Length: 311
Image 1 (cartoon, rainbow, N blue to C red):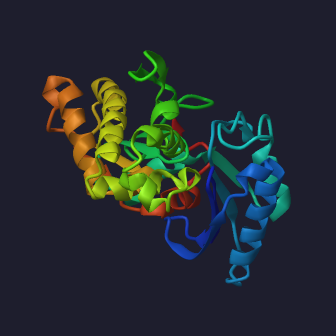
Image 2: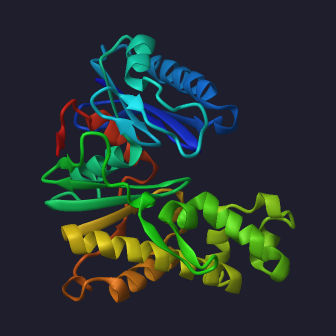
């Protein structure tokens, strides 16, 4: 049995499960992101203690999917783009000492990519690309069940550049299309759209607007939500079309909180992708929801093996 941990910008998860990715016990909590990295580590350690109390079986390793780039060889965090205080932190060393087990650390989107390729939406496919659209945006390419990446990071689609029509300049995809960015953009527009369902769903308080609220308004056909998500999906489609032209995935799986908007989101993204994709790929590279939902990262953390990367 193994421990799998997700350390994200908005949530933490810890699971006990098998090396094949089967979860036996799972606990989750909100991340105390505003309190910084030490508070996040304390909360994660408490979750592990809680989930370990549910099983008497011996544990062989701990795997961590971390919300930011990590140095694969050392298990050190390069940076978290959502939570302060992680720069240069030895996460693998900390986990080994905290839990008394060998530890493997990987970027959370890479961990989820492995999970979706082996156990989820990409099962049975050779070339699978996964993208997470949540508090941040990341991605991972899996070929024949193994990550294809560099010695430190890879698949960082959130840090590719797309055109920001509102600002009239290029910006990174994460700055335009993450869940937090969608919420910020919606709040900025509310003064000019006081009758939007977004504000009504937030009970009149712009500070309560988040991506989930925008998603509900989108499903109801609210014009502001529709216009905003059309722009978001166009930018995501440009980035995915570039990925597809380079690596020709058989399927693209999308996870993360924004993907929970469901069919209205996937319909827009699919149409925009087919418009932007290299012509031979249009209609031949399906974009589908991640099959493992909120458990993608923690299943990937259970599956992680040291050296399981094809560079």
